Length: 482
Image (cartoon, rainbow, N blue to C red):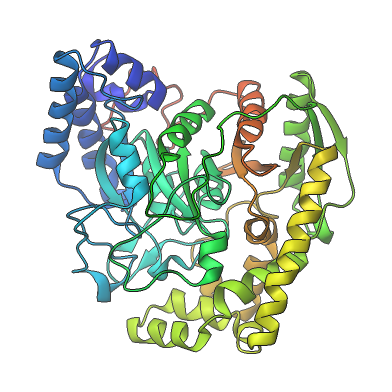
């Protein structure tokens, strides 16, 4: 392949080529930088890139391989890191003007893990202010566009990461997820995203003046975003590296015991008003799983989701809500202000008794899900009730905000359980991507990935957002998404 075409390959393919010296990490980095130069002006997915540092890092990988050293399972793979985690020498802006000079002196565990695995970091990706929204834009870095259709949201809060992966700027990207911020951007950009179990991937930002409130500790995780399920598996293996800075990290195995290949599919959990296109994607995914040998039963109900949404709000925004509002007002970001205003009725009513009750209720919901998963090791349900939203729909008034919140219920609720969840792209509806969500037991990401791989293998080869129909097309990085 020519250097410009290397961006089209998978992360696993790149790592194999680099380790066997069929291509160099430097050539891969050059391809990613060329792709970034070609498409990022239209997307604004990557908000900071230092080409000299990228190429210097790639040369380090090549020199290590030349010395006969093991360069790691992700040798030469181009990755991007989100601006809400510490990356040494870069500002941890979290989309905020007030943090534009908050330069990290050390990297977070997840960034360290990717670099330890041999990855080459090519850029920092955009997020909404405070990482609050399912839309990606802020007053510091501007708006990120969906590579398939600029009228649609690229998702959030990891919208920059998903757009960078979907458009070929990088082979794999880091995302964070407290209410869908990995899964929804992957869904909106037509790729895959894995929210790992709580405790699987270590988290810590030295730039933070205090540790996160308990809601964030219990529900926020980091995970990989990629174009193939195999790449998600590779990214998870790298990210799950132990790190003493996170007491929540658990040394759980990446592979669990063999369980019955049984799936519970629910089209409208808790009465969700699921669009016909999304129902069709779920039924299609169920058919692919059955073809792969899974037993798929359609069920009318799942363990609680709506109740989990109220607990999510209580634990995330109910702890110091007024301080969150004041910070958003100081920043002046319309999206952050609207996101907090939309939860004012619930958050402002929460005192210590209500907060304590939410913590207790969380345990019961997690237990109900664990027991359900004893019967059905995998659950198939919507990522969202709708196809990807028009961009900035949440800013079009209270009714539009409520529409977004209702549709996102399957993503908001699941972090309360601590379980892993996988967003799998299944195809396109005109210019809008569509996909499904898979859930499994705690630390059973392997089951999500196994089912996701079977869904992926029985679909149509993915097309590129700029019209490239195959990763082996003769068209190259000069094609810019329109």
